[in-house]
Length: 352
Ligand code: FES
Ligand SMILES: [Fe+2]
Image (cartoon, rainbow, N blue to C red; front, top):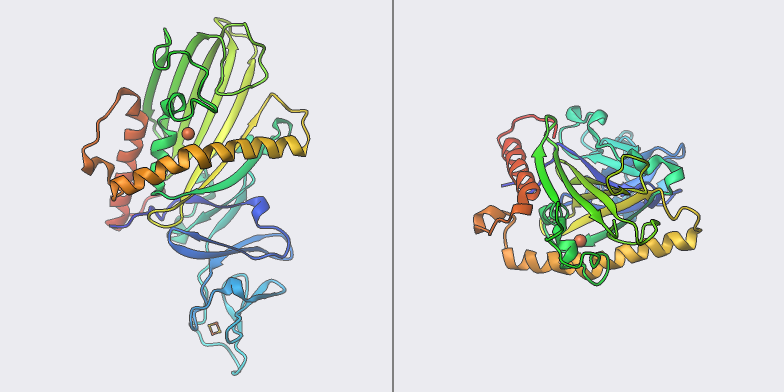
């Protein structure tokens, strides 16, 4: 059974990772992919494999917008067509490199690795908060040694903040799980997205970390999560003075997009924009990024690597796990993913 959903938009790279004339190679859905920008700045994604003897094209060199293979010199245009074969008049008809639909949006390069005719740009998840320069968006990439669905499990079950992350971003609730009036809901909407909401009324510190609000005032807080298949999530965190409809005291939107590297390793593209701490400089941005990257690399990443080793399968439900009330969103996602993979394996066309 396939491990991946192919007919879907994935983040293949961050816009800033594919810059200038440089070649950028990354494994996605267990295929080697080469990214670069044409002279006009248009990003390109092609299979990083020469169709002659299967050298990595990324080890070759650029000739204008074309790639020349380092092994025997076949040259391919940005559309994957061979434009030159050194020892014959015209290249063989099958000298073609597969290229992939690629759209640059929200500071990310979205790649479609399924049937090209199904690639509808309108289906790219909305992460437009990353476009709001006034909210000082930041975005970065890390990896983890686990199946991509462990990323969904991790991000759809945020109670782990108060246990796994107690020493970093999760220590702000004295008695986790017992805040009076706290509610949680999760549902699948008409578009096949999973929406979950945690509402925490009347708390003193309305965030998982410092967010610019004064201490000593009670706040109501909403944490909304929106999941779009296969593994693209957006968190919206809002805090307001308790019991008031007035202006947001704090507002932050986070992007969490997972793309499989292999069946057991994954890319994690993470970023946020916010309405607080906006007057810092680039050094402050770097500190933010290394703080969050460090938390993931020291806390979530090792946990997912452990779980990958313990499970030995991507089929969580086959292991008959204990299900807790706050698992609802994660379980809805697991079920949808199972259905999408089954549909693709059955050859059904769908726009995931
Ligand atoms: S492997 Fe690329 S030209 Fe031979
Ligand atoms: Fe976490």
